[in-house]
Every structure is written in structure tokens, then in C-alpha cells.
Length: 401
Ligand SMILES: *Cc1c(COP(=O)(O)O)cnc(C)c1O
Figure 1 (cartoon, rainbow, N blue to C red):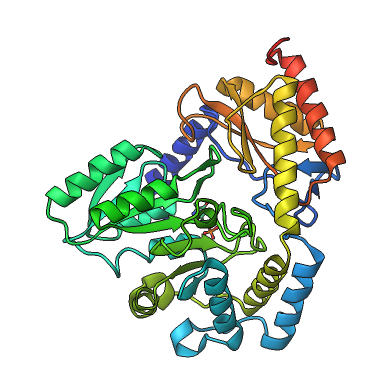
Figure 2: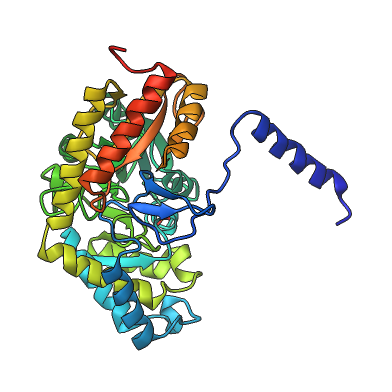
């Protein structure tokens, strides 16, 4: 406690964040997660900003499955996986995830952040090349930093640039090349062009990896993910993803792929070797979620109906959205102060939303991001749309106004 300059330096930096409007306050919820949540002040809000795509966070069946696993396997293991932290429920979940994703084997992590953080370094070295989309998730960027492979970056979703980088890596004589992309980019709801990526990978002898955090459980006809959506199931080398979004919403992550890849990760991946095992109640609840969505596509179908309805109606009211089909719907307001005012007004009107502006999105691209859920009722969506219309009129930002 003798270096006062350290603490006053931090205070000054925090003050700058506040003054620049970049400080991120926490919004405290006093209820379960769901289509509606209760704020700390007791107000009920319709929640339009959770990654709760299938409505399984806070869901009764999920909680019951977690409670059953808690009862059977206990609270935790006080161990990493390879010492004494592996229970039957972990092995069952790894097998079930492999079946669901159409892969050979799967390894669990405490978070997708860890899965991405621990996937590159054990598999690639300075002789290899990682070719990464410019908008990939922070955890991929950090994972790549921990690895000695050469880094190549291509412009978001730009297949011509990807090919350029593949050529550059080939000309540099790199031994193995891997193309890495988010399956879905969460700021725009953009879906990666996996059909084209797989074609390019085959043309240049490269491997492929996708992060399915915003896709597992609901993209594709039966919810397997972006690889199903794009018709390339079985042709992706490595899939990472989270159990903390659509697949139950608690926490946990995974890496899935060929046996020898997963086995290597079990031997060498640092977040797996040096961090505690996933709590058994989360593994148990995740198993129940996978069972449920493998038996019926009802939740996935309802999510996509809600998404199509919201996308159509919000445009009819006079808002501009980024076109697409994903349940992430960026409602474009362009101007940062307007986006802030808009989100604040929506909060007063009983809708929980988040605004995004520079530097999270490019300058002049400020927006509020709506995320649909299977748990939203048509009535709730209509209430939200009315609030959008009212706030839009008040701020004078509707087309044809
Ligand atoms: C949310 C997210 C992660 C992190 O997931 P956690 O399991 O919460 O660590 C990783 N990658 C992408 C693309 C994400 O959207």
C-alpha cells in the first residue's frame, strides 16, 4: 500500500472512462434471468439483451436437472479433471456434445474463453499460420497471442481477403494453416460464409475452426450450429462453443473435433490442466438441455419465428436494421448520443436493451442490439415494438416521420 501513485493513476483512468461515456455500469437484476426480469427497484422489464436464445436460463426444467445432478454428484470436486475431477456426468456430456455437433470427441472447459485460450498453443508453433477474421471474439485473439504461430488477419467475412492471406501464408512456406472464424459475429448477427471458407480451406490445404458461441443450439435446421446452417457438417476441423448462452446459460465451454486433437488438448491445454473441473450440476443440466433440443426443434423454431416477426415489424415501424436472419438484430441509430438516449428511454418504457457505440462498433455505426429469445411471447414483442415506435417518434429518428 506504499505506492499511492498507482492508485491515483487508476482513479484518473476511471474518471476518463466516465467522462468519455465509456464506463460500463452493472445493471442489477433481482429475479431469475428470463423474457421478463425484475430490476433492483422492483420494476418488471422485458429483457431484449440476453444471450438466452432458447429461453433455458432461468427455465424450470433446466434448474430441476441441475438440482438432480447437484444431489447425485455433489457441489464440486476440488480438482482438475486429470487428478480426480472427472465424473461419469462429464464423460456423458462430452459424448453427447460430440453426437450433437457431429464430431469424434469433445473436451469441456470452465468457459468458452478458456476453450479458445487453450486451443492454439498445444496444436501449432512457429512453423504454422493462423488466419483469423478481424472481428473474431476477444478470447480467440488472446488464444492466438499465446501461441507462436504466424498471424494473418483478414477483413471481416471478406473471402477475397481470406484467399489473399491463404496465399501469403502458403508463399511463406507455413507447414499447417488454420482458418479461424466466429460462426456468427455477435455485434452484427453476421453468419460466416462457411461453405466458401471450407472450399478455400480445401483449395489451400488449410484446417478450419469455428467458434459457435452464438450458434450452438439454434442455427441450422436442427440447431447443431452454423456448420449445419451452411451445409458443411463434418467438414470443420475444430468447433469451440459455450454452455453459457443458448445451451442453458450458466457457464462452461468446449472444444470439439477429431480424436487426436481432443486427446492432445487433454494432455497439453493449459486452462484444462491448471483449472478446476466444470461443476457437475452444470454438466447435468447441459445434458438435459441437449436431450431436450435433440428430441424436438420446438424452441429453435419459436426463436426463429420470433426473430422473423421482430425483424419485419421493426422495419415496418421505420427503423433501419442490419439485414439478416439471426436473432441478434442490430437496430441502427448511427449517432452515439442518440443511441444512449434511446436505450435510456427504452429502459423508462420497461425494455432492457443495450446500446453499442465506438470503440465497440465502428465510428458512426452506433446501435441498440436486440436479441430475440424463444421465451418471448408475441404479446411481449408487441409491447417492445410499441416502445420502439414511441421512443423513435420522440427522438425524431423514424424513417417516413
Ligand atoms: C460469449 C463468447 C465467448 C465466451 O464464452 P464464455 O463461455 O462466456 O467464456 C467466446 N466466443 C464468442 C464468440 C462468444 O460470443
